[in-house]
Length: 284
Image (cartoon, rainbow, N blue to C red; front, side, top):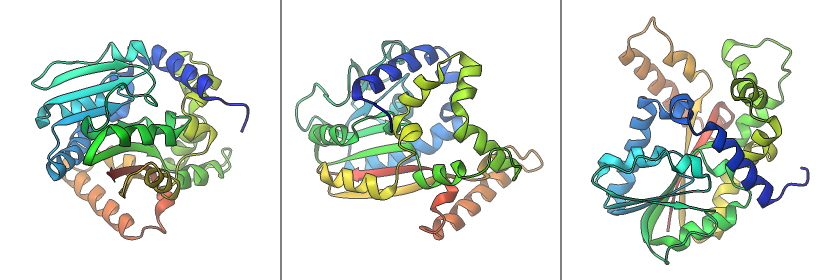
């Protein structure tokens, strides 16, 4: 695995995201309106289910989850991130009282039981020591609170793609995923001039550890003090092809994606390797 430490993972994250800060909201696909709508629906469900008023977002970056939460009626939203240039981009407007903390999320400077809900989006795989962060999130949540995390690389998908021969042609969707999974560091280097090793280390759980599994996440969350964990499998292989199919109307594309997604989720756990990402709700 190499000689990796928490300190060099944190340093790589600051270096990577300092260079991406100015283009992050424009270039990252999770900022697309349809994805914001999808994640907002999940957060709305969670907010209503537990009656949440106070929210913590760890690894807030430029404010994706703050944007998602903005219209949902939270009283306070606290974002925390280690990269100054990212947190400077956060829009703090709106009716909620938005506060920002610059620092390492394994040490959240708030008292026990400060929040109703915690979130982490496109962030879990950037952590070196997940158990320490999960324990800290659990500590700062009130009894009955919940933790939502999304866009977590699915170990089974990453393993399946990385086992394929990149010199062979498979299908349009698989060929694209080979480039984006096993060659992402070179793409980032070409697009932004970012050192490939820095990119690899920054996304430690994905690039170095090979992704995360439902079993390992569940175990770590339960050991951190959560009492129940529910998982969602997201973004099936070939979904992008449906999204971009201009021969279909938007409604037809949405219906086709919903049908495929539903069928594949019915086949879990056999179909796990066909989903690129995991999300979870962990309840205290």
